[in-house]
Length: 337
Image (tube, rainbow, N blue to C red; front, side, top):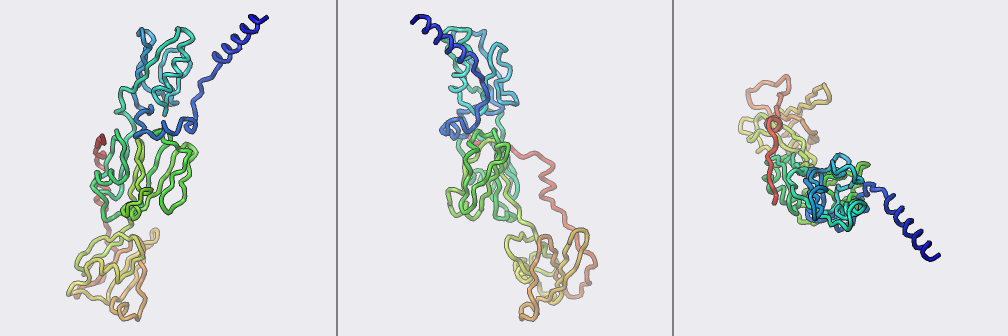
């Protein structure tokens, strides 16, 4: 009777073991400590080349990448599917050991990531001196990458957006990212996240405004919208509007009036859809408080008339040469190691 019970228990355990499904684990089920390793170095990413060595022979060895679903692509058909995305070498080796145990006696499995060069790159664009792609191979933070990209331009609006696609960086997306003086950023349905950073907080040294950057992150330094100042000013140029701008303030920002300027003849060209309107302003009356100082909008064109000059009938057209030049070439690639 005792032998019968022992045999029955053994068969029950065998059925439970062999009938186990190897479903993809949820990212939240992966130990948090494994998810936050240095740039995910010890976790398998899309693009990695993985080597599986069954010690003592070579007929069951395998080398390859992950398929689109995150499984080891092309592992011999005798094996149950092995999920590898965002899992460590030891976790994958443990699963393969269970599978190979059906046909081999006490197999020893060694799994290694032998090539990490095809992981997703970090892309930084927007109001930086040099839009750049980074291949991250060590721990790196936002401030360091900004320096590598040449720093911020005058056109930075004051905000930085980091879009983090799901499953590319192997970071825990079930934990909201909290940025200083802001609300937690919710995860999207596909596990992606959007993180908003204030440049003022980053420059002031707040740790929460300098997050770690992972493979696949897309960083955009938001550009401020320009207001154009032309005509009889000392430094005609586009001025990027971050705060409330008025006619008198923006003329002062452009170096003030020239000697031949007519301060009482300032024209504001404003586009509203397909319609263009013109607003007359008088800096002399604004200074004396006789009239209100017009609040400007992005893309307004302010023209200060000069003595002897005629009134412009149509507003000038400005071309954005910076965007045009960047669109012709791919971003340079830098290795962060």
